[in-house]
Image (cartoon, rainbow, N blue to C red; front, side):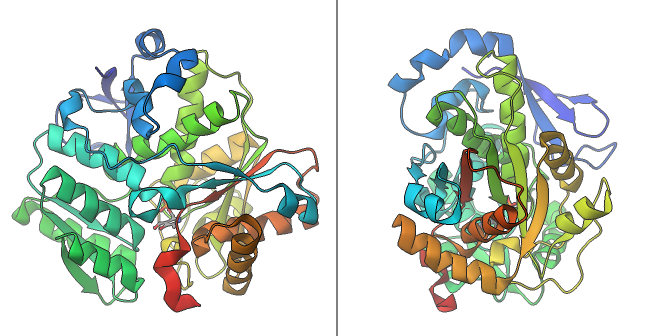
Length: 387
Ligand SMILES: Cc1ncc(COP(=O)(O)O)c(C=O)c1O
């Protein structure tokens, strides 16, 4: 059913066969991207006919990696609401304001999309166990989709991870270890043990398919805006798969004749206490130096180094967007402001986008006619100890 052709190294362009499990490309240690036969996909999946398909991300199955539908591991992820936030928008000077509410996904965050795609494909290719370092929500999603697939999951989290994420992983039957360190330290443990333990490593962008699940946010954005993408997309970035995935989705949709060449300005938001992408963006660098002593209450933004840094920076610049940071005080204030104005309790990472928008407006970087989308990447219910 799928139209996956092969995998392409994002640094060298070298192709890899699709029928085996891959992590980073062996020759360049870079993320691999799935390549599809988009001409054939466009014939099989007509944009006018999408309305009759199930309201999950699997409505775009032709551009997702699973080849045999029996391997789709789904809990109903995707096709989340695009909430109009006109009164909040009018108040701050952007009347055409929308919230893409990813908190409604299974396990309460956009991580469900990536895990649905990655764990489906890992199961299809015969993985026997999976392992992941997680700042919180990715762990919960891994535990849920691994349980659904019947695969053992080994999850390594910083010891100060939101308690809800830890409990969720345990209750869902995953093996969880709390680590005295950051997500990067958790990643090192996975890397050092995976060979001997027989785990397939599903760290952000170290396997090719989480980004495929995340890219469906880009497809949905186009569909929900009636195939005219918004002017500005503001996105909280740690590892950056959402931003990178949407950028890939826009390219695929243009190749399929679904959209034109217009793109939203992609805005990356980070926390002031951990902002490697913002620093690299400002310095004009193509890659980001790891951030030392990362600290923020927004657990998902506590990512000091990202393997996809160069892909994020490229997408931000090509789109005419930018990267900026907000303080913990600003993002926490925005959490209450967004919740009360919209009626949905956002994760602090998601609310950071509102704090960023207010800064962009103050700097005259947003026009009042712009259609602006804030990505609320998760539910605030997992962070109640912050309130
Ligand atoms: C709610 C939330 N938002 C944003 C992020 C950052 O996501 P990414 O690492 O894909 O950039 C995370 C990651 O844990 C998260 O949990």
